[in-house]
Image 1 (cartoon, helix red, strand yellow):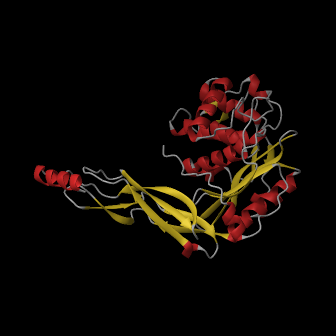
Image 2 (cartoon, one colour):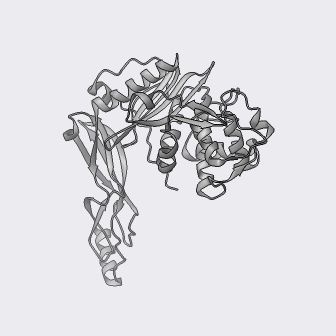
Image 3 (cartoon, one colour):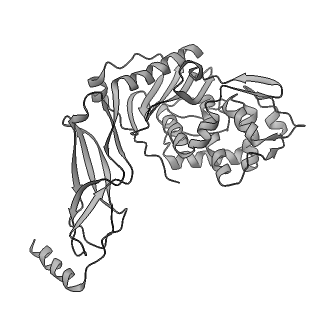
Length: 372
C-alpha cells in the first residue's frame, strides 16, 4: 500500500505573509492542506496528550485493513463478548445475546463513538483486544507516528496511552488517503440508530459546514474537548486537529476557524503534473543521450494567495547519470523556493527507460567521462 505523501512541513513565514494566524482556544493544534501535504500552522504539535476517542481512528484503520484483506467482511455477524458489552463510556448498546454485523459495529464506532463497538471489532479482527492493540502500534510505527503509544482500542484513559497533535494529523490524513471509500461511507454520517436507540455524530461541523465530511471527536477530563475535522472545497482538502478545547461548541467553532483561515489565505498550486517533464537530463553510456525527468504524481504546493508566480525550482541531479535507467528510477531532486525562501526538496524520477548502449558507445563515453 502506497503511503500518503504527508510532510510535516511547517510554514511560519508563509503564515505571516498570508495573514495574522488566528487565536485558537485549545491546548495544541495543527491545520494543513492534504492536497500538498503541507502543514500551514501548528501550536505545540509535539506535546504528548491523552488522545481520548481520537484513538478510534487507528482502530478504524486496522479494521479497514482487515476488511481489505478479507479477514473480516461487512456482512459478518460478530458474537458480542461480556467484555465488549460491559465497556464503560460511550456505547452503541450491543448485547451478548444478539450478534451484530461488522458494518453496524463500524458505524457504532465511527458515528456513536461506541467503546463496546471498538472492543467487539478488535476481538473479531484479532481474537482479543490486547492482540489488536499490537496491530495498532505496529501500524502507528509504520506510518511514522513517532510519539504515540496505544494501550487499548477505545481511548479510555491509561497512563501509557498517549499521542500528539502532529501524530493524529498524520493518522487522520493517512486514513483518508488509504481508505477513501470507507472514509466517505462512514465519517460524514450524521446519526446512527441501533437497538432502537438513535445517537447523533458528535462532530457538530457536519451540520454547520456542508464542506466538512469528518472526522472524529474526543473527550475525557484530562484530554479536554478534541476534534479532528476535514473539509473539501473544490480540489482542496484541509485537515485540522484541535486538542484540549473547553467545550463541545468551542471545539467546533475553533476548528471551523482554522479551516476557514487555511482556505481564505492560501492557494494550492499545481507546479508540475503527473508525467510532465521538468527537464531533460544528460545520460552516459545509453542508447539515448537525454532523459525526460519529472514526477510520478502531481506536485502541488500550498502558498499564500497571490504568490504562485514567486515559486522557483532548481533541479539537482545525480551526475553522472549512467545507463541503464528504468522508468520510475529516482534521478534527482527539485529544490523549491518561494520568494527566495526554501519550501522543500522533492524527488524527481525517470519518465522513460534508457537501455545500455553497445560496447563501442560505452567505451567512448568511458573515455569522455575520464577526460571530463
